[in-house]
Each structure stands twice: as C-alpha cells, then as structure tokens.
Image (cartoon, rainbow, N blue to C red):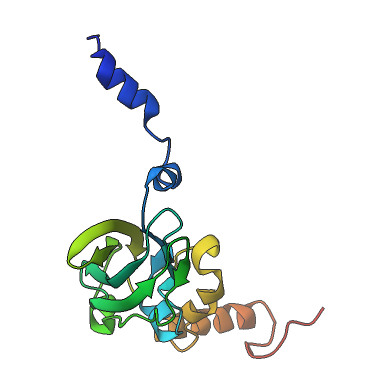
Length: 192
C-alpha cells in the first residue's frame, strides 16, 4: 500500500461524508432542489410533479440581481427551462413558484427499460455560474413501477383488467371451476 501525501490525506479527512454535508460547506448563493426519485409515463399521465421544490438560498451571500436558473435533462425526458429572478436580498431564501416541467410523453412511452436520468440546475449571475445541482433519478419504462417508497400512490395505474392477455386465464379459471362442481361465474364477490 502506498503512502499518501500529508496534504492529500488532510483533504480526504476533511471531505464531507455525503452530498448534504457538501452543500453545507458551500458558501454564497446556492440552489436547493428536491425532485422525485423515479418518474415514468404513468406519473406523467396522473399529473405527478417531477419537481417538489427549487429554492435559492442566499443566507451566506450578498444581495444579487439578474439571476437565472437553467434546467436541462439528460436523457431528454424533460424539456429545458429557465427562470429569471430579478433580485434576492442578502440572507434571504426564495422559493420558485412555477416549477412545473414540460415532460416529453413520447420519450417516456417509448422506454423499454429503466434509465438513469439527471436533471441539471445551474444558478447564473450575469452569465457566471454560482452553483450547479445535478439531481439524479430513475426514468422508468412504461410498465415499471417505482415501488411503495417513491410511487406508492401510482400502483392502481398499473391495473389493466381489460388486457387481452387476461381472457385465456379467465376462460381456464371458469373451466376449472366447472370441472370441480362450482359456478363458472367470475364476477362479483366471493362468498364465505
């Protein structure tokens, strides 16, 4: 094992353990972004917002004017967007209001498997980048569910009672019920 340069070791020792700590070490005006963990066609169909919040935190910064927040998505599941902020005072926090994004439904509908997506937010002051946030999420295929922790409310969107693949299953079930002396009716509630 090779020895580390003492200056390098010191910088490693001071490195924050996670990204939340890293954000605390940033001085000046910064972006705080909260987005969903996963997104898919069903989320778009059910008007689930991709972004939960975008906040410009200027607690450590000086008063600034002519700020711009730019968003880009990779891959192209969401369209680029810009927000223009006239002014933010020193010590202030500003929550952006219009955070609805234009999603590309054709892109989401065409996915056969999940992809890693990145939403990149850049806070610009007169063209100079003050802070950048890369928000990573899973862009799921049309028939993938993100799980109870990130998409619990969307589980019913995946129920497809009229899918043609169910007809043979229902027919076989009715035949099996008849063979065993039961009514082949499958509609209604089970009786005890």
